[in-house]
Length: 322
Image (cartoon, rainbow, N blue to C red; front, top):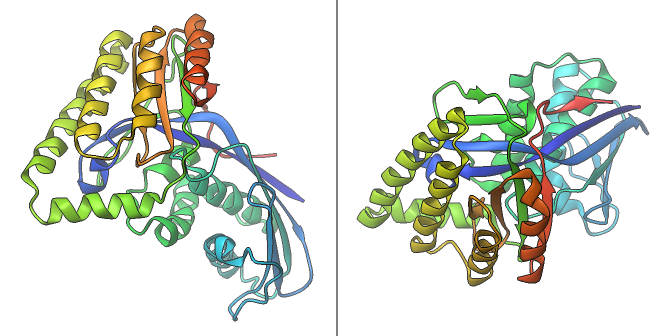
């Protein structure tokens, strides 16, 4: 049996506009997907997801033979597995793949990317296929494109490498040294949404020449560069203020919600350096940056405002075997 774990991710600044060439600052956090893989019936790949409560069986390279009603949700993961079987010359092999995750689905924490990365790593491990981290990112992006239509690639990169990353399309990522001087508290509204649809709508508005959005895009890019500099200086007061500015621009762009705004305000009132939505918006999660000794108070404030809180630390390793 081969087992792999991959972390979740949060966007500190820059979501939405990263797809259009602006930089984004992101971090891997210690919520994990875990995938275990073992040999199965020849030619059959069986995938089960504990979180989704579904199981499906696929015959590689042919029309799937399905169990239950979950195959549509698991088909994108099968695309990753088929790519690895092709690389290993093992199309006739059988696999049993079990997916477990503590990352909420569809709320902006990179659940699909984490699962794709841990699946690619676990399957490759069982087959004895040595993959670089760049190759794992490439394979995970097969699923990401299937689900999110036009992803930037930041989710797969962050969950593969871990740590804190400054990302910009077409440029090598810059990996920052994580610090234990601050805590990230996640607040989940419980409202799921389609990242692909939200990103596509925003992209369409920019392509149609929406001048307000184009100005916002430039402003968010500048915010991210300042956030990068603030993080490097460990100036978390300024980083929090920049997160607040980023949230306000996203709110003006129409991708925040009243639930998200309420959780953001509750976190700020409880003493967070700053807070903002993370991911595509339209529901999902927000994040707050705070001192480690104030994480409990911020978490309680988010819970009192109707959210579910997760106090998390930066994952420094990324995907791992075992």
